[in-house]
Length: 319
Image (tube, one colour):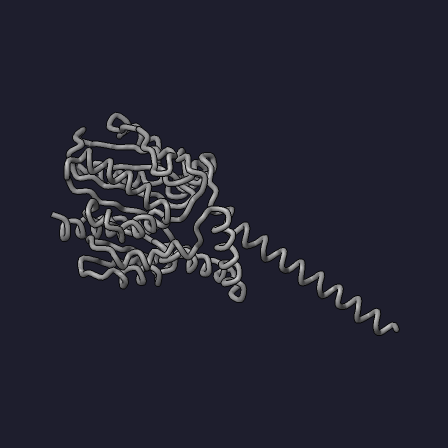
């Protein structure tokens, strides 16, 4: 009789532990879908402040230099939310070659001021905007390049009208790079965008999340968490992680494309940049490797080479 009660108690403990594990894993999957998808203006401002403090960059100096050339306005997305845009024209001429700069996850358009400065000093117009749910963009959720590519399309159409058929290019970093890479595989990009520069992108959302989980030494459950997160994402927001497949989309790219990635990227691993490059079906492409920089820091660690590589590529492929 005593053995029977011990077995019964053990079974109850086992069931309780199993239920707790299931609840824990499901909660983790939910949070994996929910937390990265929700930003706030306060949070993105804080992250950009920390970034500028880290690299020693003066936002106020940039604004004092270029404020007179800035034009801030709003576009309305295809889903009726506000896309805040900043247009900077150093020569006060809209009919001029134009670079669209697309920021990374958890930041806002101001994070691209250092790169904007490079193009402005060379006489380019620069267009900056807040991606979905970042900064003052009024969308509710982030989709990591999937629906962001439609916002980029709206911005490019506006630039195209203003620039009167001048050269229009786009450069993005991390999630901004993924946005451009995803967009570059559309018919719209093949019609309206003259070139793309993709700095430190991920090749797909599920691969990125798997890699992030495995990097904290949890390889056995990475697929489980990713699948659960993707399912919750579909239920909550109408898309899943597997929809954000940059590599599949970029195989339709027909425009000159420069991909830049660091061997020591600690957020979007180097092999993802190689995957994107190898998937582009044409020969109007280049790949630049940085050896020692962490994620997003190649511009700061090897600025001269970074800038030279960008303009050498433009000079070679864009007339």
